[in-house]
Image 1 (cartoon, rainbow, N blue to C red):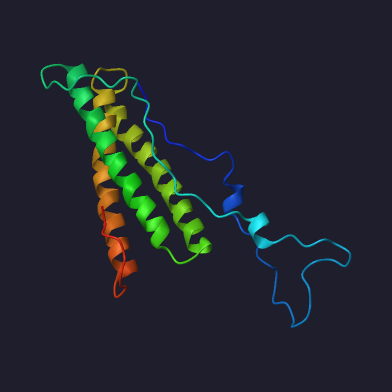
Image 2 (image 1 turned 45 degrees about the vertical axis):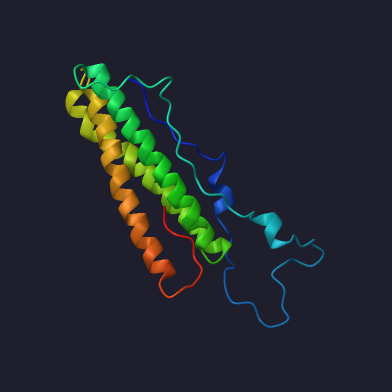
Length: 170
């Protein structure tokens, strides 16, 4: 079975931002005496929007008369859904207010991608070892992509409500 893969950054550690253990009094410093401070931008670089990529090299031809053809149709649906989500994520990423919001959004996207993979693996396990397994897996990815796209649209509408000069949702 050919598997879908998504781009994962080398380390998710850059998404984590250290939080002080407690409040800092006015004029006090959170850095030990003699230590060199590092600008916040150097500690936690701005996140980048995640991009979903698939590994269909090359995708099968779409033909409803054979299992490989049905798999090819499903591959095209997944590629189309992933491209739509990538465009939506990119737009949302840039509409968010600050890097903290972007980090949270990136974390949520990676969590959703992990969920999608586990969900579709679970749903396709019914056909484990058979020719229907990759088809069930891909069809599940396409359904989950459509669901995520609807979620992202709702998030965009809530985020941009009352704002002017925002780009149109893809």
